[in-house]
Amino acid sequence: TQPISIGIVGYGNLGRGVEAAIRQNPDLRLEAIFTRRDPDKLEAGTQMVSINDIERYRGKIDVLILCGGSATDLPEQGPALAKLFHTVDSFDTHARIPEYYAEVDASSRAAGTVGVISTGWDPGLFSLNRLLAEAVLPEGSEFTFWGKGVSQGHSDAIRRVPGVKNGIQYTIPREEAVERVRSGENPELSTRDKHLRECYVVAEEGADREAIAETIRTMPNYFADYETVVHFVSEETLAAEHGAMPHGGHVLRSGRTGAGNTQIVEFSLKLDSNPEFTASVLVAYARAAYRLAQKGESGAHTVFDIPFGLLSPKSPEQLRKELL
Ligand code: NDP
Image (tube, helix red, strand yellow):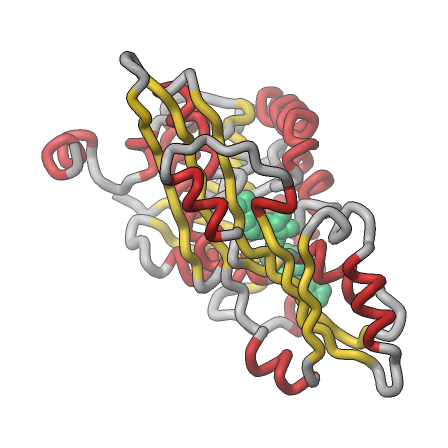
C-alpha cells in the first residue's frame, strides 16, 4: 500500500517536530512544508512551499498537519484549510474549543473533509484520561497537575516587565499535593496548593532587581495567586541551562466504588521536549484522520470521537493479538 501523504503547515517548533516524527513512521510520507515566510530562506530536509501555493497540492496530500500557534494562526488557518484538505491540529485555548470546533466543523462538513482538532497532550492525551477515569469512577474528583514545564504565556509576561531583558517561567507541581491525591485523601486544593511558579530572569544593567521581583510576584492573573520564586541569572546561564522545552504532568482521579473502596487512576508524562512529543501525537492522529476519511466520515472530530485503534499502524487483528 502507498504511504499516507502528509503536508505540514507552519515551520516552528511543532512543525520541526512533525517533520522528525514522520521519519519514525514508515506508513507516512512527508510531501511538503508550507510557510507564510519566504520558502527559499528556510532550511528544511523537505520541500518548502509558500502557503499561497497550497491549493496546487490538492490530490497530492492526504492530510495536512497544522502547526501554527493557537492564539492567532489556527483560528484563521484551521477553518480555511479544512475546506481544502483533511486536517489535524493542536488548538489548545481550552475556553475557545467549542467555538473553534463549530467553525472547523462547518468548513469540513461542507467540503466532505475530516478535521481533527485540539489534539496533543493537553488538550489531547490528558483529556482522554480525564474522560476515561470519570466514566469509570463517577463518584470522585479530578486533579490535573502541569509541569515541570515552560509556560510560554507566563514567560512572555515576565519579559514585558520594565527592567527585564529576558526570562523564562517554569510551572512546577507541588509534590506534596500530588502525594496527598495519590494517598486517596481527596484533598481540597487551592491554586496556590497545586503549583509553584519559578522564574529565571535576566535584568537590564542597573535595574532594580527587588522591584522587578515584586512586580512579577504580584502580577494579577499570572503570578499573584501562586507562590512565585524569582531567580536572577546572566544571559549566558539562561541560554545554557534554560534553552530546552521540557513539560509534562499528571492527571489523577480519586474515586470511591461499592463498599467505599478508594480507587486512584493516574496518567503521567515526563517530556524532554514538549513540541516533539506533541508532534508525535499529531502524527498518530493524522493516520486516524486518513482512516476516518476512508470510511466516508467528515466534519470536526476531537480525541473523544476517534476510536483508539485507528491511531496505530497495526491491523485490528494484530492489535487484538498483541496489545489486548
Ligand atoms: P512557534 O511559535 O514555534 O510556531 C508557530 C508558527 O509561527 C509557525 O507555524 C510558523 O509559521 C511561525 N514561525 C515559527 N518560527 C518563526 C520565526 N522564527 N519567525 C517568524 N515566524 C515563525 O510555536 P510552536 O510550534 O512552539 O507551537 C505551536 C502551537 O502548538 C502553540 O501555539 C500551542 O497552541 C500548540 N501546542 C499544543 C499542545 C497540546 O498539547 N495540545 C502542546 C504544545 C503546543 P510560518 O512557517 O507560516 O511562518
